[in-house]
Length: 140
Image (cartoon, one colour):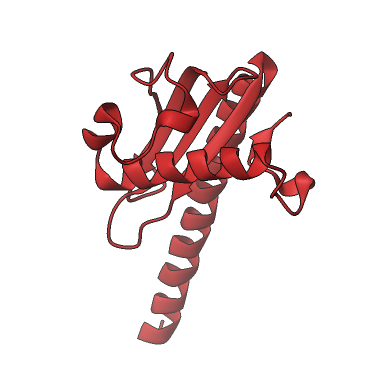
């Protein structure tokens, strides 16, 4: 077997493994989102990273924007899993800016994901969301 064929086979196996793991990660996101969605309104925040670990945050909020529960997925690879993020419970999402004491203590990619969730929540509340079907705040 030629080296080119061997390389092609290894590449195909690696690609299929990547697809499988990505599918599992998407399934984990959907499972976490649906679990929160069953309990109420969900706000998502994300910050993708190329060199740094990417972060996805889900906040369960009440009608006033007070955080009832949270979870976060952070990591470099498809092996990242959701972990509870309860330190923000009871905080108003609108108050979580970069100057907030709890936000300052977080990893910089987590801070950016929290800021993204806050911005999207504000845009949704003010009616600035263009396409409600793609809204990261569900269901208002």
